[in-house]
Image (cartoon, rainbow, N blue to C red):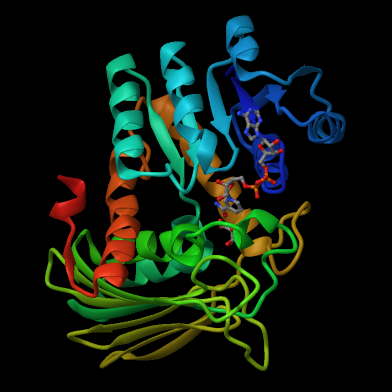
Length: 344
Ligand code: NAD
Ligand code: 89V
C-alpha cells in the first residue's frame, strides 16, 4: 500500500530520533522538512536525503503534498504550528510539553476538532518497552487489584549538555520530565482527580526546579507517588530509566534499575529482563527513549490507516498536561489541587 507522506518541522536535537523512526516506520515517509535554522535544515536534510527543505512553515503548508505533519519544535511554537496545520486540514503530531499554558492546549485541541483532523501528542515514555511490559503484567491480573503505585525518575545526568534551553526556563523538571512520569501514572493507574506537589531547585546553575515529589489520587481509588530528580547521584547512573513500584491485592510488581521486572504473588516470584531493544541507529543510554519514538510513530501510522484516535491524542494529553499545571499550582500554594480546577 502507498506510504503516508509526512513533513517534519523543527530539525533540532531530538528530531533526529524522529527522522530515524520515520525511516523505519511501516507505511510512512518524510517528504519535506522545515527549520528556521539553516544549519539544522542542511544537517538533517543531508543525513536523511530530504530534498524539499523550508525555512518557513507557512510556505511548506502552502506547497502541500503531505498527509501529516510532525512538529518537533520547542513548546513556544507549538500552538501556532498546530493551528497552522489545522487551518490546512493536515493531521498533526506535536511534541510534548503540549503548550505553554492550559488555555493554549485547549485551543489546539479545539482547532483540530473543528478542522476534523487528528492531533497526537508525542508522549512517548508510555511506549517504552519496560513500561509496556509492566502494563501487560498488571492487566493480566497477576498482582490482583492495584491499590498503590510509584513512578520514579532519579538521576544526576547532565541533560543540559544536549538541551541547553532546559537550564533557562522558570519551569524545568515537572514540565519536561515529570510530564512523562505523570502520563505513565495515568497509563498504569487511571486518570487522576487531585495532586499534591512539592518542588525544589538543588542545582544553582539552572533557573527552574530540578526535584519534584507528587502525590496523586486516581479515579479508581489508587494512590500514587510520582517523583523525579536531576539532582540525584547514584553509584550507577540510571538515566533515562523510569522505575516502578506497584502493590496489588495479590502481590507486587517492581521495575528496578537495569530493566529488571519482578512480579511476586502467591503463584511465585518471577524476575525477567525487560530491556529495550538497541535499534541499529540508537545509542545507550538513550536507546530506551529511541525505541519508544519508533513505537509511538508506528502507532500514529496504524491509527491513520484505521481511522482510529491515537492513545495519546490531544484530548487525552490534556489530562496529563493538567497534572503538570496543577502540580505547579499545588507547589506554589502549598495545597492539594483538584484536577477539575485546571481542566474545567
Ligand atoms: P531544539 O531546540 O534542539 O530543536 C528545536 C528546533 O526547532 C530548532 O532547530 C529550531 O530552530 C526549530 N524551530 C523552532 N521554532 C521553529 C519554527 N517556528 N519553525 C521552524 N523551526 C523552528 O529542541 P529539542 O531538544 O529537539 O526539543 C524539541 C521538542 O522535543 C521539545 O518540545 C522537547 O520537550 C521535546 N523533546 C522530547 C523528548 C521525548 O522523549 N519526547 C526528548 C527530547 C526533547
Ligand atoms: O524527554 C524529554 O523531554 C527529554 C529528556 C528525557 C532528556 O528529559 O528532555
